Length: 133
Image (cartoon, rainbow, N blue to C red; front, side, top):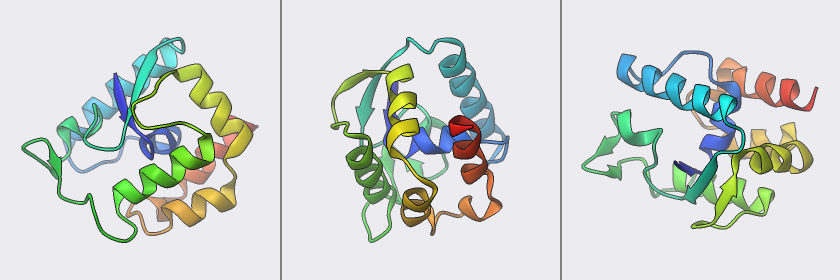
């Protein structure tokens, strides 16, 4: 499975909302797999990934929200830097979760995600609080 950096945080806060029904169903399936198979090997990318596959911003395999200040690619880079993970690296999902527990804070998450349309719902911060619980 391929996952881009910022989606590691999105997975924590997902509550069944999304762009459309296809996106939500795909996200649900991916999260179920990750939660059931923590020893799953993930290829870390900073472009369209398995979650993006059903996103309406994915046009012919390219994200239309990719490159601008505060863009998804910028969020990917910021998350991966905090977690100490490189693009192209293969990592066990359970190790990613451990890195999030150890290195991600609510403040860092707010700085990265503050301009995301989903962040204001508060689910992402709830997700990281639950993880660190």
